[in-house]
Amino acid sequence: MKKLITKKDFILLLVVLVIGVVWILLGNSANKGTTAEIKVDGEIVETISLDGEFLEKEINGVTVCRENGEIYIKEAVCPDKVCVRSGRISKAGEGIICAPNRVAVEIDGKNKNQLDALTG
Ligand SMILES: [Zn+2]
Image (tube, rainbow, N blue to C red):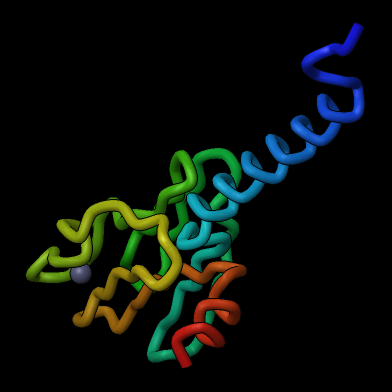
């Protein structure tokens, strides 16, 4: 009697399934940032991971917060509050700038070099 699916077929199917799941996960996280670089006058003064508990840092009059893998500016000593209204960022390449305080927050991702290689 011949079985429709042999043990060997089942293992092969499982491997294909795992590769598929990993591929989807990698694809979805391609643009996901890993760290946030906080710059003052273009100089990195602080690098914080996007993962972790709620974090609040005050840099040059700007309060930068990390929450649920996202970065946002809670409050800032600036007249326009453009930075506060910029909302939350979490993807590689995204950024928030507070021009009056010369503070910039940029998201960096581990796939950045890979993307550069593909586009460049
Ligand atoms: Zn601002």
